[in-house]
Amino acid sequence: MLRALVVLLSLAGLADALYFTLAYYGRVKKARWVPQILCPREGSSCVTVVQTPYARVFGVPNSLLGIVYYLMLIGWAVLGGEWSIVWVRPQSTVAFHWFRWGLVAMSGMTVLLGSYLICALRRKLHVDCPLCYTAHAINAALLVLLVLLAR
Image (cartoon, rainbow, N blue to C red):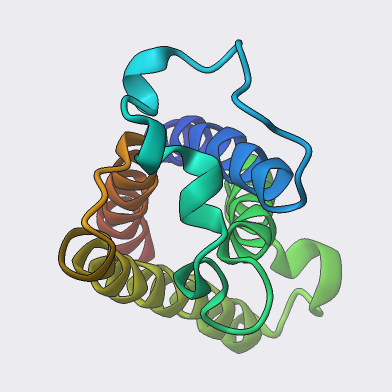
């Protein structure tokens, strides 16, 4: 049940990350398929947010890193959390243990980065971005689920 929630939340996060990646690369210009409530003001559109330095904290678009992150989580959850079958010898569960906790650590980093980005949105950019907040809430929920699954 928890793995199914990881997949569902990761799919939602992936959709959000794909949208922001398309916006970052100029493929989304006030998309009609995005509800108006998500980008309410002219000056606070999603396209405006991705044009700031905060949209690429590590040099590449944050959303592009998010795509990789969500795909890893989906793969891990769909395979039942048993990637050790695919790329580690069956008797070597140590590597799997470290990978599982590595996902938890990565998830924790996304929550910390998300906290920083929310502060930047509010205090420096003076922008409310519901899609950004949604992505950060998804990441926080994923962290909780991954911790529960890792125990």
